[in-house]
Image (cartoon, rainbow over all chains, first blue to last red; front, side, top):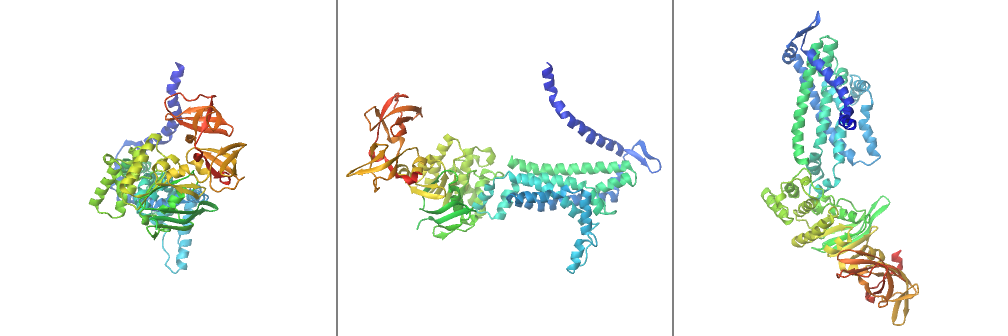
Length: 286
Length: 353
């Protein structure tokens, strides 16, 4: 009887530690944040113990907050798009490489992840600053210096740099599963190299692209260090805005509200996107 | 001028020579098999014809046109890959239509030709399925339909039957031959299965270590193998080493003091030779009634025939006998072995090394 009961409880015991971590570190703080977002706030007395929806109405009606949300969405979408445009060809080339070059280039691609995000971002600000290498190069060839640092472009450039491995690796994994002869079959049937890639290879790595884009979009939309250091004080994204509300304004309930709205928006976009692409891919790829 | 010809085609990968000086002429409508053990260069040869591998030297021409360095998508050859290489994200009909689409065949004609191709391989009801919903044999037929629908001058088959189970493989062999007869397409098939090559080809090309060593009709290949490798690779055989003797009109092979009557073309007396005799050419007799006496060591029942290993003064010989319904000699019993001297093949010995 004891044997039987331990057999029944084994799955619970095995899943227990993970569940505890998830509840303690994700669900509980999230629930507290949700509760916090409904508390009233007063600048002279702090957080009040009264229920209010005013933070939500403030955020969704104030032009300032909405513009930051739009910027976050735009930057995350653009980063995802650029990552896909660079990452997919990159992983195709990578999959066609032979060792040892493949390992070398895989390391080069994963390299950025091994450097602290702060150090890496300061590196970009040195390159992109008004006296940085990029502007020095522009001047050397006789062009006017461009203002790159503290613009959206700087944020996108740095985000693409960090996020590329998250696109390359899923697509590369999908390519690994591909029978190389399938592409050759398309050639023998009269397809050019480009047509074979577009019609045969690309549709089959669409699921890899999907998971890559979801990771890249999610991480970009909630990125903090890159916009904080390369966007400057004025160019804010959602994560830096939350940080400011908490630590500059000390208005924790408003910060919590923004965090919840960003989370909900992110979730909606990713789920819709996932459903759209996956439905199409499932139907054909099984 | 042959329809498809290979002239001194070689392929080297670094220091390894995969195919060496392959020369072959194939007539229009012929079914030719490239037969050999794995790693003999047969698939590389096929891929050079398909344009997927570029020859290091030599020339390949199709219908008088030099195609040695032409891109695969300009050659217009039909290829059936060993893995079938179907497009998993397209339906059967879309797979078959792909080649026509690339040729910009108008929609109405395309539909018609896809329908014809699918009915040729008897897959019409499955046109809207995806490859993953098909069995191995059905996938293989989709691959054939896809290759044939573009009406290629040459159809190339790379081990098309190796992924099928034994019974299906046999069915598909005849199916393949039926389709090829019907459309009349010149076909080259790569295989390592000698039974497959013998049963459906007009001619068989044997490849060993990158070289084409014999090109012959199946039955001639079987009866007159040019060397010991081919005689043991194509079908089963008994190989016995001996010395060639000739006294006047009669000639014989001396195997350890035992004289076996045989005839052979000009071989100098005293030359070491290898004797080859097929198991089914040896007949079982009562002990003392044959040319040679022996003792049955073991016997195996194969359904249509019996296979015996017999211990003789020449060594262990394999003998096969058709199943006539009765009980054949049991293990340990003494038997006589007989054969027609013409069935004893003499091969020059250096080839046996």
